[in-house]
Length: 323
Image 1 (spheres, rainbow, N blue to C red):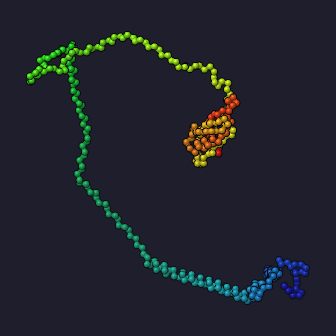
Image 2 (image 1 turned 180 degrees about the vertical axis):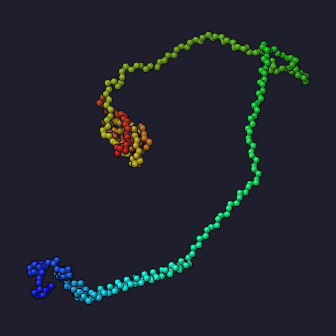
Image 3 (image 1 turned 90 degrees about the horizontal axis):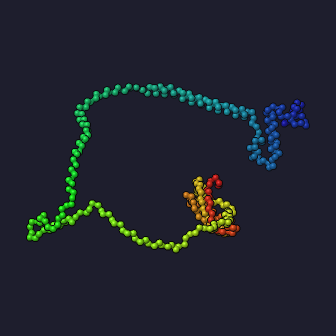
C-alpha cells in the first residue's frame, strides 16, 4: 500500500518493524490480510496461470464499484418488497371470500331435531285358558305280605327196633297173576344185617426184626489243623487309579450313577477279565466302567511272598462335580 508523502505514519508503519494490523480499521485490516494471502499464493505457485484461469481467479478479479454494489442492493430490496406485496394480496383475497362462503353455508344447512314418538303401551297379558294338566298321583310303594310259613312235616315214625323178619324161599306175596309157572322173589330176601359195632381186631404176633444194615462208607473226620494257619496273604494293589470317561450324552443331561466291577488278576498283575456285578440304569456308563477296568494294572496278590492269581471288586462313581 502506497502512502502520500508527508502523511503521518502509525506505529505499525515504522521502518524496521512489522505493522500492527490490530491498530488499523476493520476494512483496511481485511484488505491487508487479503493482499498477504495473494502474495503467499503467488509465492507457492509453480506453474503460471493461463489467461482463462486468471479471468476466473478471485484474487485477480477486480472489485465491483460502489454504484454496482448499490444497484445490486436496490434490486434485492425491490424483489423483497414485491414478494411481500404478493403475500399480502393473496391473504386479502382469501380473507375477502371467507364471509360470503360462510353466509352461504349458514343459509343452506338447516338442522331439524325431531323427538321420536313415545312407544306404544304393551298389550295386556293374554290369559291362558288351557286346562291344567292333572297332577300325578303319588306313588305308594306296596309292601308285599310276608310269606306264609308252612309247618314242617312231622318226622317219620321210627321203625320198631329188632331184626326184620327173614324171608326165605317162595311166599304168597311173590306170586303174580297170569302165567303157568311160579314167580320167585328177587332182591327182597335178607340173609341178615351187619352188627352195630365192628368187631375188635385180634392182635397179630410181632414179626421178626430185620437185621441192621451196615454202612461201609467212610465218615467225615474232625479237622486236626486249619489249612491257612500261618500263611501270610498280601492283597493286590492298584498301581495307578484310572478314571472312566464320562459319557457326553449323560453328562449333558446331568445324570450321575455308580457302577461296581469285578476283575480277574493274573500272577503278573494284568487284568484278564472284567465284568459288571452291580450295573447302573445306563448302558453307556456300564460299558465305560468295564473298559476302564480292563486297562487297570495291579501288583499281584502274594501268598507267603509268591504271586498268585486273584480277583478284586470296586465301584466307579460318576459325579458331575468331579468333572
